[in-house]
Image 1: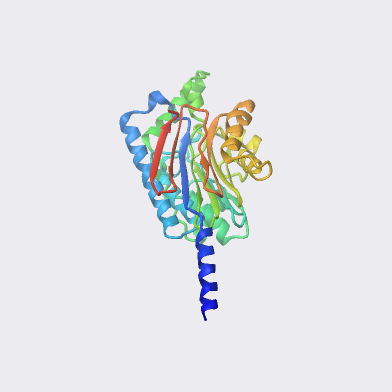
Image 2: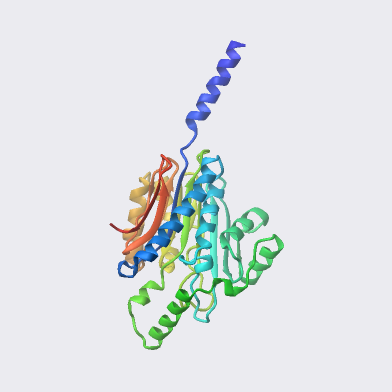
Length: 326
């Protein structure tokens, strides 16, 4: 009897000792312009980031999965008009909103992704449904929305996504395009996206990203966010969500490159992410940033723009939010 109790105790101690400390890191997009960041806007953005962090971390603290945590955090950001995803999505050249999202479970390598939807209130939930409730990985446009309806994902009238700020950004972009100007706005239109990476108590990683794409985009353009390995990626060792000029993250397969450096080259995650964001992507002509997290709870948030909306919950459960590089 004593031997049996000792064995059970040893197993319990080992299981407890091997439990990972939950971690959550989020971003609300790179490309923040210092001069455009008013005190009021900063206040609201910080509040939204904190709310998203608390929502996602509550899942992890209660023993929930990293997959559920990243989804919960991103829904908060999609519901805010202050980020280029969901409610705050930018407009296409034709005055529509086209939404993309992806989610990936690092423990199983399962994936769900969607692109070009117009009526899905929370694209990250549809991406999760593609992963959980279909034999497919990636759905687009009308087909994705038909699937959404079939599995009970909330659809809204397209007018739900309209905000005055995003509409004005489109008007400014159209005027600049007509005048063939390469103004600062021309750079801003490439930015925006929300993302999350998480590590749960079981030691499993997950990543998710959601975006409205690029202001003034045409022809059904799809960026890196829903493309696995480009803007979103997770495996047993590493999880990444990217933000920035998507074309260059696709060309460099940025998210997967970071995780490959961690897994095969044994680079620390901070080094791997920095090399890709500060060297590989800029050499191609792009910019932006990433959030990256490894299976030991180490994380990094490099970016090469004025700022990146970002936040994390540390190993002590404390919430942190940052915007500018300093």
